[in-house]
Length: 314
Image (cartoon, rainbow, N blue to C red; front, side, top):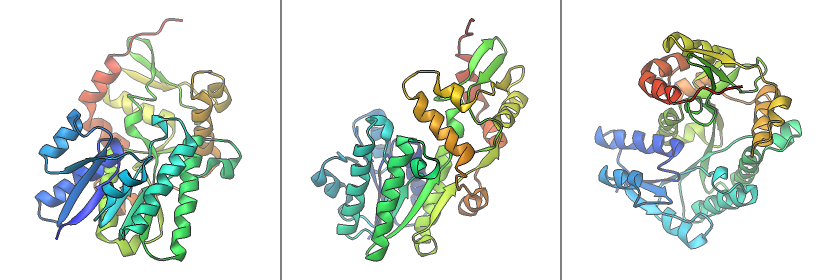
């Protein structure tokens, strides 16, 4: 029988990358897998696309025990990612993570891969809910080692390359000049194409005993913000990209919803010594892209995204 791999967040960046890699394995006869893609909207365009590609697409309410049990029943492996930004509730994210973990253990899942993050509050004393909640779920997951009923691996993604043209897009100050307000204060920051983590997770699923109970920080590159800007400038001529050199404190005072949360995340990147491992990431995925290669291969998308930004006056 095919091994059922249940992928939460299957239409998102992380889950979508894993589904794509599993589909590749199936199409190339690399592995006998059955993909159960979990999404909130099975009838949406992305859900329908996954159905057309041969996935079993299932709706799951992560707040409901019965729904989670139905989603996981019969699974060989589970990829678990939760999304704080859907509801802005650390308590809900913790409950969802624990629920999926408990059900996976109860139903005999052989290997669970959890997309976690560090507990920033414990690390540097600043609250960062979307990290801290995952850190607490990591701590809960580690208690399962004592029972040895279920193998698990934790993966921690770094900042996404994909954020540069989207969630952390620059200000356009004139026709050809773009400025990023990313408060790294000159310290290097790990980053990765979110979809390329899928190959890493696939490698873990192929050799689960090698990564049993391990925590692996995923990274494709590590540069200063100006370093990322220089690569964008070199490949998107005549546009020039610059680091505004905004500090964490200045960013925190910007006042938009989530400013303090994001500022504390970058404070952790600067002071918390996040454990991301480019060498291990490339061991799991030999084709993981440096930022330079990623930019070269995504020029059209980047030109469209940055070109649509309006010049900001003042």
